[in-house]
Length: 306
Image (cartoon, rainbow, N blue to C red; front, side):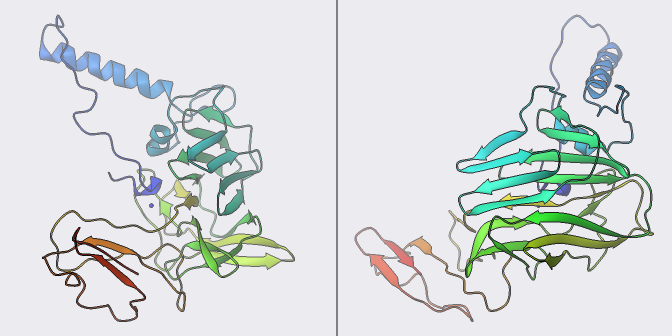
């Protein structure tokens, strides 16, 4: 899901960010000291708080940055996009979209500490953090000590949708025979710097018990650095899109999240004709695709193909 891959994506702060010209400080050394003090004060202000108000210095710095400043009155119900709402409760976090809704159970922990961009709390294994994103909501479980072979499990409420694990490792959701725009991103394990340390071949699994589903992950953490972070994220997108303003001989269509073998995909291409004669922009259809329909507007040099 800029280099904080963990946040799929949040951007790193540029090296030049926050700099300004200040008059009257004397030497450059004095100016540097003032900047250092301001940075230290800001970092202290946004430290995640443990019960009792003590700073939790074990919290990953990338999560501190992602959460933003503490805001006791911050809402845990957000609307990141039109028709999309994200909610954090004591026992689950939820994403509701025009396609349906999906929620994942949260860990058992202390009350939430609210921040500008999410919430955090302590747990028996370390810390749970939930961050609101532009088109979803993301959970980060910070594990402070090794647990050996551990089976992680989340109660999955699918709102009538049917979950399945795609070939890319993500979890997609079907309504009938149609793949919706809701998905759970593939497994991501991160270190304290937010770098990807996911063991090769690690994948989600789904278990059904009656009418309920569970999202599961079997993780052996003997070779992982500690602390480490388990990172499930629920996201939503209406469709997979691609655009180009340059002159190209070929284009590559991105595959939607959650697609598996034997799915039927529909691609709509709108393009500007390269010359005065219509019908010259598409000369070959890729293997596995079939041209269903094509329309050309010769007067406008615009065409569309499905």
